[in-house]
Length: 207
Image 1: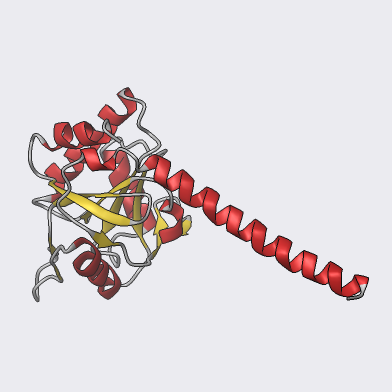
Image 2 (image 1 turned 120 degrees about the vertical axis):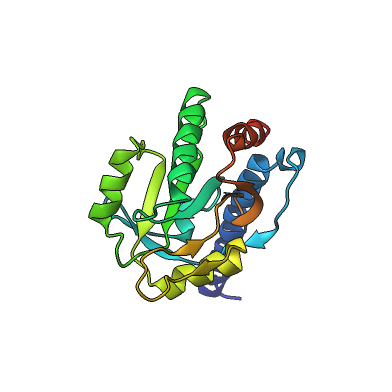
């Protein structure tokens, strides 16, 4: 075997070794973050489908932005006159508790279910109204209604129905969802319940 061929084989072997090590490091990092997950009483096991979005600051993102971390999601819309009001109020309370307990590494994501109306400017104003800290809370839009409907139903098992003719109110679920570093929905909570913040914080402290 000539020296040139030996060099090629060494390079190929080294490349595979480096890739394998990189994957192993990623897996070990995720496993480390998930080591206490069994302490939580889960009620879901659903993989989050790939999605793309634009947040209130007009920054584009996708599913990979949340890989390797825990995050909490809900589905709301700014023109909502009923359930979104207590839901977003509870999410605000949750964020305040998370800040007090230094859990700001966990992202909060509010998906708009009315993307045609909820532009980035509208979402920014909505976030301001609730004094949301945008360091770890994103309000997202930038997709079609059918796309968010599919994500809601398939990934979160949450019903979603467009407004009836002559109405502007989207029918949607009221749950909060905890997603693990592998992109799996592991638990949902009643987003309108007055005790939901205590329940979520209890789980987050176990992670």
